[in-house]
Image (cartoon, rainbow, N blue to C red; front, top):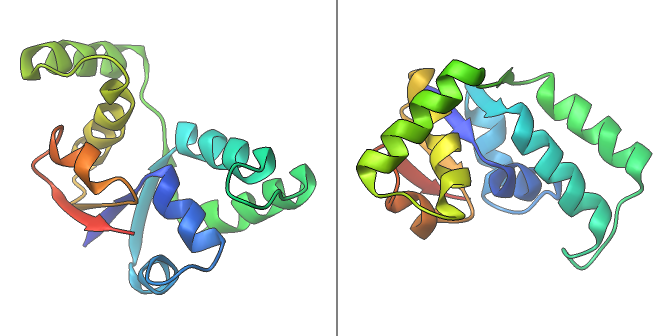
Length: 132
């Protein structure tokens, strides 16, 4: 089954927090967006997680994790389609970022989304939400 990992779930897996790490190991078809990798880098190197990782180490870790995933991007047409869908669904403000993750997951036929922000995703997708 295809699963999508947002940045919060990836960070938990990278920092070896339970249960995200074990879920990451058992899921066979994992997807994320390039944007999530940048978000992870920002959080890992910025220190808001209570610890700061060196930028080189963060890039290396993200490379290892991304090698075990399919990393996708939304092109301009897909992004604009998503923004039109967001308008129809009443998505506004910062919720657009979660919506774009959900849209990418749906676009790639993922059945569930791993996230540390389950409440945020409940408002923007009908996919199964797995708390990380």
